[in-house]
Length: 169
Image 1 (tube, rainbow, N blue to C red):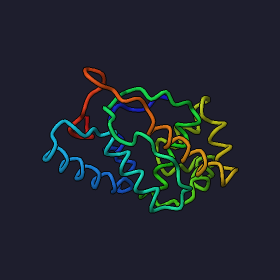
Image 2: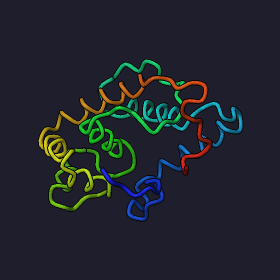
Image 3: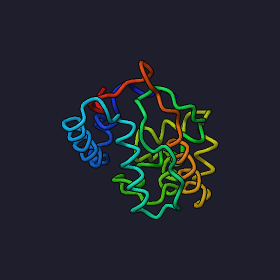
Image 4: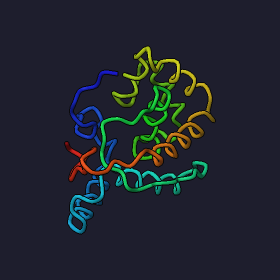
C-alpha cells in the first residue's frame, strides 16, 4: 500500500480522531525522563493497546513478551492482519465502535480515515475489507489474534532496530 510518509497523527484529515495519541506521547515523554532510550515506542503502544483491550469488549488474548521490543520497520504481518490492525482506531477515539460498520462506509466511499479508503482501494486488501464489513465477529477475533502475535514479535537487540524517543519520527 502506498501512503504518504508523514505520521498519521499529523494528517489534517484525521483531525481530532487520534486524541489518544497525545496521551501516549505524554506517557512516552515521562518514560524518557525516567528511563531514557529504554522503552520503545512499540512497547509504549503495546502496553496502551493491551490496557485498552482490557477496558473494551474484546476477548482476552494471551500476551507473551508484551515488552522488550525495539522499534522496527518490519513486522511480517500479511494484508489481512494489517486490515485488522487498522481497526484499532475503533478501540480508541475514531467514534465508530463497530469496525464492520466503519468498513461499510468505506465500501460506499465515505471513509472515516484516509487509511481505511486506501485499504479498500488496494487490490491486496479489498477482499479482507469486504469480509470484515460483512462478518461482525471476524474483526474482534482477528484483531485479538493479531495483537497477540504483535506481542510475540521477536525482540531486537544490539544494533538491530532502534529506540525512538518520540512518535513523530
